[in-house]
Each structure stands twice: as structure tokens, then as C-alpha cells.
Length: 183
Image (cartoon, rainbow, N blue to C red):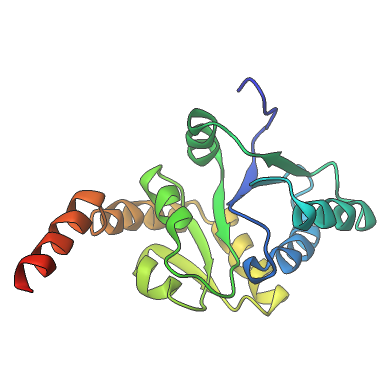
């Protein structure tokens, strides 16, 4: 990668840092995970705004800034590389309208560990391992379970490939056209 110097292993999050995205508990959970996985990194991809800047300060306060990479905006090529080389995609969100980044992760062969709130279990079905986003211990447990279990990771990846077939822009356009025709 040209702009981002990321070494494996790492967890990945892609998106903005608005409060409902629940990144503060993710960062706190990551600090706990580092006690057993000190080489692990957390890569956060999204425009560096005031929300992300507050998390940079939090990482300094928690003394984990060397393990958390604030990638900012990245090119499509870099994003694909990040998805394809991460250990896990983590989605701690409290509220989502759809949860597209988790599906992008699945499309790129990445296992997903996700919040069990909002629409995410409906979208990801059995292709993700879920946790209560308001329970840091549960988040830690789910992430470590997938990190430590190669067989589980492999199963989630296979289920993700199967699940992603349920979603496509072509299918969306076809279903939208059918609705218009029915009217």
C-alpha cells in the first residue's frame, strides 16, 4: 500500500465516527484485547473529523495509539486491500439503516463480528458473530472467539460469500422496476 502502512494482524472498521457508530466502546474493547494480542492493530477508515479526532485523543489517554491506525479516507484500491488483509471486520454500531460495510467485508472474504442491534442481524443473518454493542466484555469475547478460532473464521467467510449473493445492485434495480410496473 502506498499511503497506508498497515501490518497484519489487524481488525478493521470502515465508516464515520458519529456517536451511534459506537466506536468508543470498540476502542475500549480493543485495549482489553491487546493484553492477549499485543501485536494486533485496529484500523479505522473514515474521514478524520472532530469525532475521529476525539478518538485519537482517547487512544493516547489509553496508551494504545501505536496500535490504532486512523487511516482517514482511502482509495477504492486501498479499501479493497484493507478488507482482504484484515483478520476481522468489526461493526459495533447501535443504529444502522442497512450496514453496507459488513456486506463489503463479506464480499472481500472477511469474517464479520457485528453488533446485534438495529437491522444488522437481519442483513447479515448467520454470516456474522454478534455481540451486544453496549457490553464491552461481550464485544471482547466475540472478537477473541473469531480471532482464536480459524474454523469459525472460515465458516463465517463461507457464509458471508453465500449471504452476499442475496444482495446486488442488479437485484435492487430489478425489484425496484417490478414495483414501478406493479403501480
